[in-house]
Image 1 (cartoon, one colour):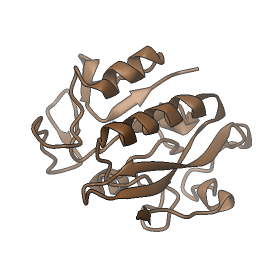
Image 2: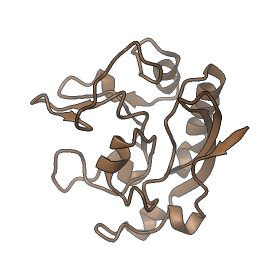
Image 3: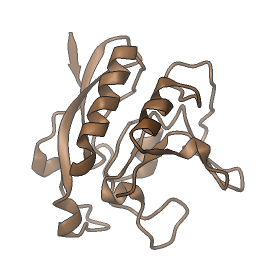
Image 4: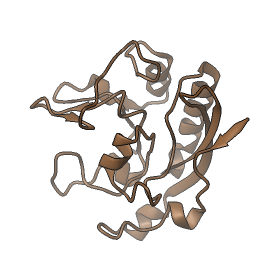
Length: 186
């Protein structure tokens, strides 16, 4: 039985963030497509991802591998969905796997995130939190437990696959740790 987690239409998935409108040229580079994954209930689910058109085959390969390995994903719902409303904090708190989100980099500033270009994906952020230089954990209250399913480990098939496709993992960073984050700047 396939459980549908997200059934947005293209215009909904690529709708503008009212707080920070996306330039038309960046929006035109995004592609929206369905992905399948096993969730924590043990059932096969279908969600949706928005990512830079040039990275669709990479992300499709990753989701095929996660499905084959039964690596659990809580959900894959575009951040433009009404229950997330473009909030990175809400998406992370829901343990939602997402890619495109037109927003600045974490920690402030005006520089846009790789997510703003559709060139990054966050996987199970509640299980694989971001930890700032000062030790602040995001999402709030998240705990990284390497024994829990859905946690990304350095020697995992997931890290090896992303690396073979030319993606960088935030778990390798030394100035901060972003266990859930993978990016491929084009």
